[in-house]
Amino acid sequence: MNAMLAGFFGGWEIVLILAVVLLLFGAKKLPELAKGLGTGIKEFKKATREVTDEIQNAQVETPAKPVTPAAPAPSRADSPVAQAANPPKA
Image (cartoon, rainbow, N blue to C red; front, side, top):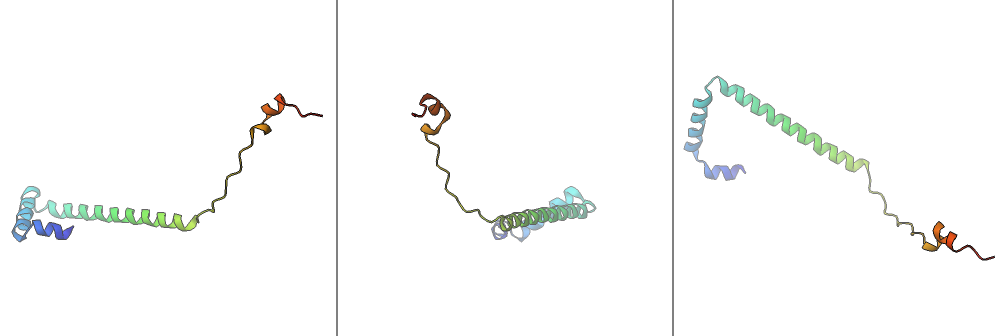
């Protein structure tokens, strides 16, 4: 991504953008903006790392369960309705 942006912006374009930002926000606000941006990036990376660790720990703690075949379904002859309709012969 950085290499792609470097292809679009040369040295003079970056200087021009920084000068416009300096004019818009002023010299006193730039350190505060940079600090806020850095803090936000740091928090984002921390949250991403925590989520990644949590996913990895969940995968390690819960091993895959073996697949067991399902029990066969009862036949209609075994149902209580079928037994009441057809009582056993003596």
